[in-house]
Length: 253
Image (tube, rainbow, N blue to C red; front, top):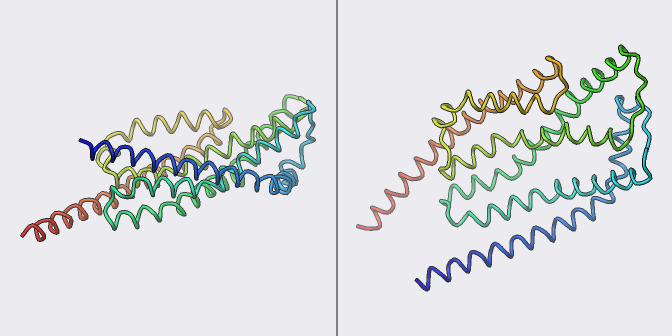
């Protein structure tokens, strides 16, 4: 009983250290983000979609609000590999040796998918949405006065969710490795998952069929890819379990 209590205390102490390390690195990344905010904002303002609009600051605090918000987001992105590594290091003692190596490789893949999701939303979806909105305003004879705060809020709300949604294959692979989900379970709930993805697509896109399908189809494709990845990961989990049982039988003899 005493050993179990000490084990719990050791886990809590390790968790505390890893949380502290994560917070420290996040603060350092956010401070570094302050030096990247200006060129990023200027780059976003020079995009073709932004140049067609006249941006205004309706409140005195709008520029500093945008500046701080981008610094925070940059800090989150830069510190995300460290956060994932700390999470991996905390749960890795409960994994097989092969699983540790495989799950460690999820970190760069996760970052790549996040940036890929943001890039898809910004370079493919965002121009189409802006064009649709401006065309609709012209058809209705509405003169648009764009606030810089509203513009960047709309940009972030459209792009950041895609970065998170593109993590679906990695999350599914990770949960499969932990034995939490199986490819059979994912296949059985496919219709419900499709419905949820359709709702998410409707929430983050304008109310037109084309933009909705531009979002929905990649999400459905991601889910199907996630099932294939889960099947591969599930086979490896079964194989690793069988090998571990064989090793235990050999050592017990």
